[in-house]
Length: 499
Image (cartoon, rainbow, N blue to C red; front, side):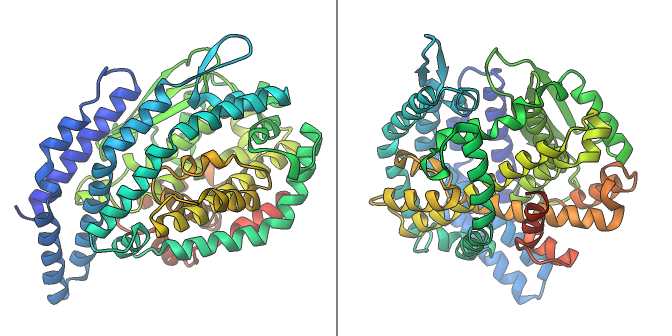
């Protein structure tokens, strides 16, 4: 075994799992082959592979080969991340299976899967029915608490086996990103936006559901924010979604197919089901698939544009880069580029030019309120997630979860969700870093191409050049390269301007 065999083995392993997950999500495969794939590449995850990479890093450091050191560290971090996911895969599969097979009985006698609860809450005007739906979700979440608690213990054991006190320390060692510092950023964002959030969300909740913010529950929030979608539903149609997108990308000089690397498959979802999008990065960048289930409405556009941004990024990565710079690295970049395109729905002139939507004033207030809610929810998750993973045990964390989430979003969150909300360890950290980086990328585009960058033919080549670099650098490094610090100031300016 050598570095190249580890690299090629990891790529084949990751590609196999990606294809398996994609085909399962698309209904193209009845049974998962993930277990067989994990067995086939077991040798890549043996301790000697990690030792070999450690020796290679040490040798490159001794020879002063900074670029080799950076890419080898990226490879080792990716190997360990995939190792942790591999060790957790049996219990994760059991948790995911529960979400797929559990259905909730509705008042009209119909049955809907647990995963559709957010859409049900958004479209249910009866507060009693919303309470029943939220109660059913909490009841199902409580059934998973023993399994998820066991998972936390397994995570802790893996971190200690790898020589670290907990997953937070392991994450810091592998990536150079300290989750505790990200949690401190989250705390500052909550403090800096507290007054604005209480004022605008409090007024909106009272208007929409007739109660003060403190008396509302998390189950009320989707309905409160749904006015953004329901009041303007006629302006957002999925009929020509791909055609319109191809047109506005063409103005920028971006090919919707990423030069043939990206394929898009569209289906109409079953009646009543929410829009879904799935990006299958089967082989980065040569085989990227964007599967869509869309019908009509703004949610469909949000779902599509976010997935499109991620798919375009992956589909434009330099194919000659080593695997760790194509398929591993900082996953915050995927989320950031997804947000960059999703937030075109917050650009009045883009809305007017692309969708002929001109009644944007009230819409934008609701849209930015939802963005602020989403940011504060993410901050609450980061603070709690880091504390949970530092402790390495779920015992007694329910009360802390309730306190953090009450502060973050101002409404009651059922304590039964205290593990459900942070199922993937420290994923919230990557999400918040993406939310901080995306406004910086937007500022960068505005600086070079003005406030209609999305219509500038030079913006496409600029983005393609950024995407070409892949995941070699972290969002912190990219922000510094652009002349910014990864902080919340640009976001705060947006919220104060629009709210």
